[in-house]
Amino acid sequence: MRLRHAILSILAFVTLTGCDSVDDDRIPPYPVSLTFENIGNWELYGISGAGQYRSFIYTNTERIPADYPFKGLDRTGFGGLLLICDPNGEYLAYDLACPVEVKNDIRIYVDSDNSLAGIAKCPKCQSTYNLFSYGAPASGEALKKKYGLQRYHVSVGSSTPPYAVVTR
Image 1 (cartoon, rainbow, N blue to C red):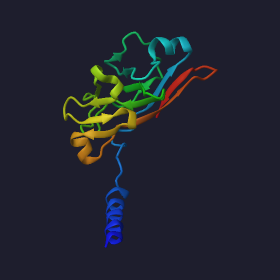
Image 2: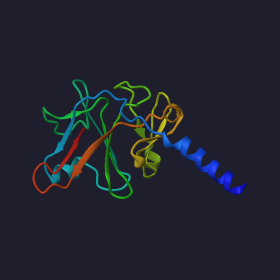
Image 3: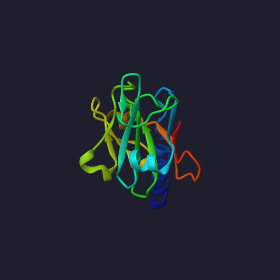
Image 4: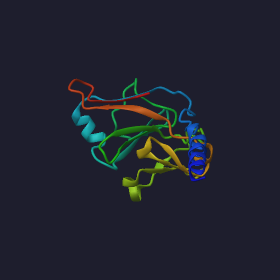
């Protein structure tokens, strides 16, 4: 009887979690290309340690950070870029657009009181996302619908220019 109960429990677990996936591709496929030409540029505008983060938005009407030397070919995705460093020193990049709202002006923000927790929140739907678990939904409508943040590639530390690059 115990063996049968154990087998049924395992089957139920596999059935419930086996097809459980997160949709992290809801954001329209806008171009992403942000380059930090040298280490000095990275040290001034990039991030260097666990919990540090920075947003980059480059549109016809917005430039964040305002003093960043954006170039003509730079692109920051649909809603902008969020660059963050996790506790292991891994650099991660996400689109700032909330995947529940899918509007380029409704942007997630990092809980600045506790950036080491790696939680981002949407100001409209109140969904939260775990930035240190690749943008997985943590609460709200995003968790209910299994919508994760759109991730981008980050390469840092090249010995030849550019020093760091964020791409789709």
